[in-house]
Image (cartoon, rainbow, N blue to C red; front, top):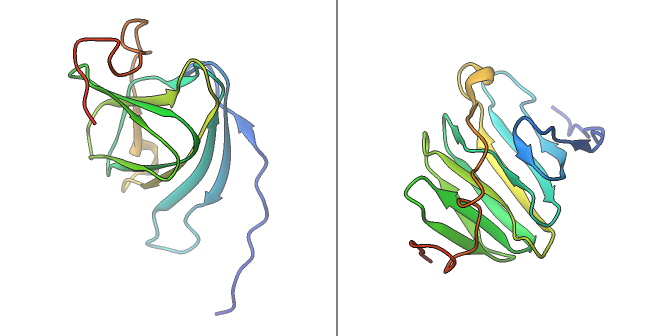
Length: 143
């Protein structure tokens, strides 16, 4: 089989149902053949923008390419990641991620579709104001 060049998909802006602030997505890879499930996207967050709480059926790997990323977990832990760092969110773990209040942030989001692609990501409520913060500005922090 010959190589297949995929047309560039247009950049889309994510909606306010699942994101706070301005977030743009560029799809990079998606299933091409039966049995494949890999999804990769470049996601760009404006300062202060972040996801709602969510989880993934088969986990998610996030690789920061620019800016400073914040990752929050249900236990109150918030961690920062800088360009070149990668964070893995295990299957079923409820989390959020986004930019710091001061800077844009970009990451590559990599995950596998669930058997039913509609069940790949489970979106939950928006992050409360006190939950979106930098490490050291609250009770729990880790690195």
